[in-house]
Structure formats: structure tokens, C-alpha cells
Image (cartoon, rainbow, N blue to C red; front, top):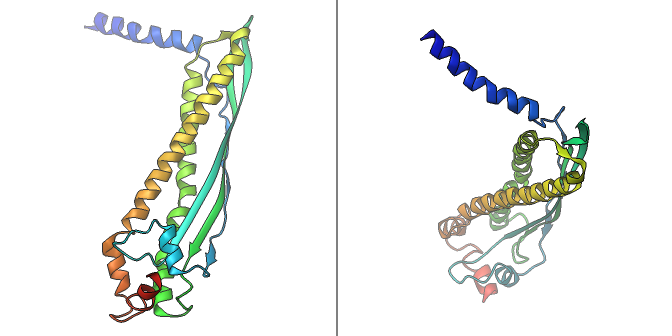
Length: 229
């Protein structure tokens, strides 16, 4: 039994030792930071209820009494440096991972027919505020995604073997392109999850609840209905 265990240990250790000798594990973790340029939501109270419903797609099943629009642009930068590890052989070290997200639109629309300070105005304002919170939560989600992305990059580069100098430029371009696409995919996943959160608070049931929040004969049933026709 002792001899068998010893043989097994040797069989397990040898491949690991070989991998360590041929590994291109980075000598240090890359510097990673997210540039997230926020934009405080801007309130627009000068659009008609008819305009809001047209903007939202004009669903006749319910009346859209408020609207929030949010848009971001994103870019990705990664710097990789070659490191010589032997005669004519190089490893690649990721030294910088720097995605950038710019919020280019964050607008909250409340129809002009609602006067500030009324029950109906406050109800719509509070509901749109929930959408704003979801939008602002994207930054935290993107930071978590960046941490995961850096781990993937370090693991991928660490699994590479030293390469000749002629292969270095192409490998650097491939890595930059691959992880640029990966970041965009992760960002689209975050957008999709955010859209699902928005849908959960934009249901016919929720609209019905909001329409009754200020009583049976509020502006939701009278002024806004008339103005939307």
C-alpha cells in the first residue's frame, strides 16, 4: 500500500511540475480600474402625457404617466507587455485593464399636466425614482464583472507557454480583441438584468395600483385620461 501511494504521488506531481516550468503566470496582478462617468438624472416636466405615451411605444392597455431614459457608452482598454523568459522566448504580462463607461443620458419625464406637489405628481416621481435606483446600481454590477474579468485574463495568460518573438504582436492583438468582446458581453448581460428589474416594477398590476393611489377620481382617471386622447 505504501509503494502504491508513492507511485500515485509521483504521477500527480510530475505534470504539475512540468506546467510550472512552462507557465507564463504573470509576475504581478494587472492594475485594474473602472472609469464610470456618472450623470445625475435630469427632470423634464415639459412633455405632454400624449408625448410620453408615444415615446413609450403607445401601448393602449395602460396609460404611461412617467418615463425614465438611461443610456451608456462603453469602451475597453487593456495593455499587455512582453517579458523575455529565455533566449528568443517571451511571455505576455497584462499590466492594465481599464474599461470606461460614460452615462450619456439619464432623463426622468413627468407629464406637464401634473402640478408639482400634488399627490399624483409625488406618486409618479416616486415610481420613476425606483427606475433611477436600478440604473445607478449598474455601476456596482460592472465593478463586480470587472473583478471576474481580471481573474479570467490572469488565468488565460498564466496558462500560456513562452512564444517566439514573431508570435508576440499577433497574440497581444488577439487577447485585446477577445477581452474587449468579453467585457461588452458582460456589460450586455448587466443591461439585460437591469431591463428585467425595470419590467418587474412596470407591470399592468403596478400601474393599476399607482392609478388608485390618489383616490378614485384623481388626475390619473380624469385629467391625464382626457389629455392622452
